[in-house]
Image (tube, rainbow, N blue to C red; front, top):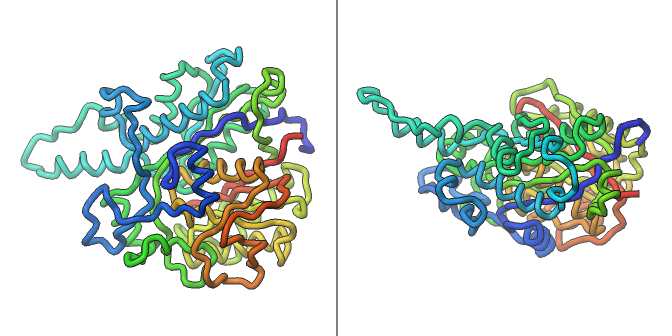
Length: 418
């Protein structure tokens, strides 16, 4: 970096996704072209325009969380706590010698406890009766509660709060966590995001906004980033966690370092509530800011983990912005559209895709983007957008894009540790 900030190492990862409930299974799922889309099981979706989603499968929170406590947690909180446990235990920070008073937690989610909210409202819809809400209702639905639970479990007393910017929420959480380390406010920060929105309220709402794919006859073919036949995103759910750490501390204690977080950039399209700026103006600004912060040249980017939701307007604007920064031919970069495998995890997407980006960087591998039968641009060759299987290539610098309704843009830049 070209500034005097402290360096930021990534020393732990956690993931619960529609294609794997650990980091290992998640990564292996990506490499195996695994697809998480299937008919919805969490409610009867037969009357909805969209009847499928990328649900987390085989998830049992009681393996890590006591049953009594589980009953007081919305699914998005259960997912978040369990992914954080994996990352924290893998990182070794509990035996790092750092006081819990100095460890921070920054968490992101776009919607929060939507199932709890939906059920609470519906069960009290009869206005002739006295309402009987659960005493845990508010604590189950608020977005910041995940950060609170993680802190309580480990007695972490550093800065602790939530970031909320729709589908960019957990990417912003990573940015905030990095800034706390860079400015010396915390030596270790647990960052991540979670979301559990496969329910009637959210599926119905996104159907009404015409954002979801309705390819009910072939769910596994529905998420089609950068394909000319795409018709919307596929709802996903899950959680992901990264442990960010002062680089010098990580080296001193002999921690396993995946990579460094060397740059980030944020912006707003200032254009439309749900649509991106058609020229990718805000996205371009965020990417440029991330690269400038890292002090590298655009030609040094070898991977872009795209936001790539498979919405008609979104993918076009994102590709245009990437080309405006990296070059018409994408320079030395390849693109990965992870949502073709996992669906769109909304507020958890930024953290999950950051984990995938870190793993791609660490293993010098670009996973395939599924369902791209007709790329929307001739520049998207197999080398630039692998579709058949993983692409092995040297990756020194990679960016991960996260964008949200309201025009929010967040770009993270990871680099091999030097």
